[in-house]
Length: 263
Image (cartoon, rainbow, N blue to C red):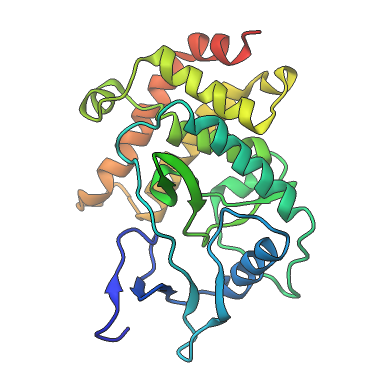
């Protein structure tokens, strides 16, 4: 990083900076695979990802992609029109990656979700609203691709529904001005409609969302190395809001399921 670069918020657990219209990310073992994937997406006409700059790497070995101008709705809720569009974007992504041939000795970012279900597509795998650039309050592009890799499409959708319909506990919902349980369930349904998930494929989907959230909470504890001897309080909120989200989903499971399954 030099003095002319600005540090960007987010970026996962690696340093991300910006200079002019170029975003730089500290390289990782999976960087070459991620850059190859983004180049493929550009070549097949997928519109919703950053473009590779030059070779994809600067002289220091950092990843280089285009900066995408826009806003983020997080932590406020999406408007209803955004959810089917997001489902459509994920469908187009999975179709676009179906022809991707990973480079020899490809490495993907380790991620707990790869072990859930059957990883039959290559997805983004981190589709929270903080990674979705929007324009006019509608999804415009997916950013922060470091966790991209093989995933079960329904697991990718479970993550996207949880985070974008904001299936969170009541106190968070009140603080962030989220709509009712029914409205958020309909938003989840609209995302599934946008992807084209058939009714029979939705059987057991709420359970997939619930289980994903539970695994996410456990992974947060593992990543933060929380043990019975831990005294750090910083990881607690990340674990707590996930665990409470899972409990909220269990409490409202019947209603959520009824709404996504309705004719």
